[in-house]
Image 1 (cartoon, helix red, strand yellow):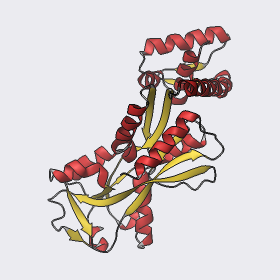
Image 2 (cartoon, rainbow, N blue to C red; image 1 turned 90 degrees about the vertical axis):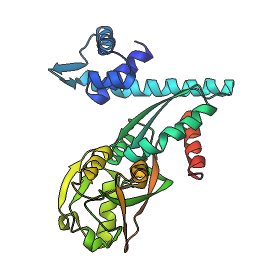
Image 3 (tube, rainbow, N blue to C red; image 1 turned 30 degrees about the vertical axis):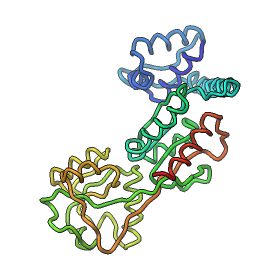
Image 4 (tube, rainbow, N blue to C red; image 1 turned 180 degrees about the vertical axis):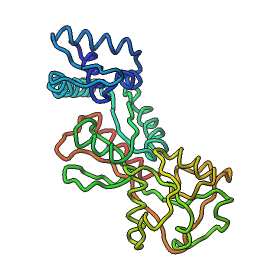
Length: 297
């Protein structure tokens, strides 16, 4: 077996899907299948049970996954060590990020890091904050950027960038430019899904004012910020979103910001790492880069 086969195997294992592994690794599905078949033949065991479009890892796959991750991690550390002699960082950074920082902050921060270290490549997983936190906890990724804190002693939260949450509406739904929270919640609302950091922070803010989601008519719950924005544009309801995510829409007056007269909604993004993991050189350098760049934002 070789390191590339193990990377293919771990991707299929994590995603529980050949097609998702294909997208993640930028390989064709037949290539993914060939690598898994070769690995199965070499190990003389079946790694995945294929039930139509569903695949289920076997006990052998469960055992192999832990060792495969260790081998891949050691290979990356070896690259780091060699890179030190070359005085150049090399290797791949696998980073998790929730929707807002992953979409609106990370691309430019990655670009500035890569200009300094052109031999470094990136793989970015974008999901909700809850999922990114769980991936860090389960050692599936070493570093993530999220929009809320988790109640877990094994996660280290490093303050990153401050974000402003704002009320947005279609111009036809809410006529006024300013409103009280009490009057706002008379209108229907559009929410992100439960794992969203934006929703989690919103619930905390509302709770501090004695308001729960049960007090509000929820017009819809959507699994992405873009879907929420489309619903707002259509006049389905108002929403509370990161200002970063609606800069273009506000600029072109597709949606309008409704200022609350009796509440300010601020939150922080956090870099999350596992307290019991030691970051390889490449990751520790990127972490320092994020800290330095956050002061400029």
